[in-house]
Image (tube, rainbow, N blue to C red; front, side):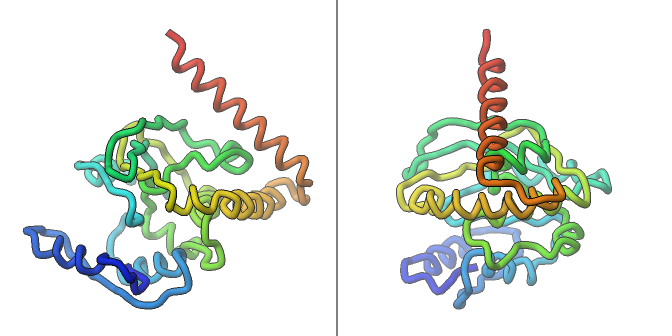
Length: 225
């Protein structure tokens, strides 16, 4: 999916497709209403039993798909995620982030620890929850994981499945304030449903801080000799 890029995106895609490959690839370049809308268009023409999306800056590591597929052998699994290796804009390794097993309260109140490039969803579950919200532009993945967790299990595979590129022009860096603001709105909506009442801004921040502290302690314990 390409939103009529003005750079060499389409040329580079076509060059890559001229190399020997066995994958079935459909390239669609047209105007869209944002990232979520573009992803939804792509999913609408996909045919797999397991779905996911990869942004232009990121890449899967060799063998990622074969490693994640067995996670969906259990019928109640709606999504599975692995770990991520962070790289710079030149593709050089920065560090690897080994994530925790799934905890809905931690995801709801704390940082979004599920790495989107390393996450895959059962197609039936994607359709059941309606995919992404098109009105979200930064934290559509967090909202999706929370909705999926209401209908089935999300499992963690302790293996690096993707490489996430960090650079000053990426959305998560360049629009950090907008990302945080939208994340608060998502947590407020889901938190209100979970609590049966609307949490205050102070309560949201307190719960978020508590989860961050717990994650910090966990990492310190894992690093202890």
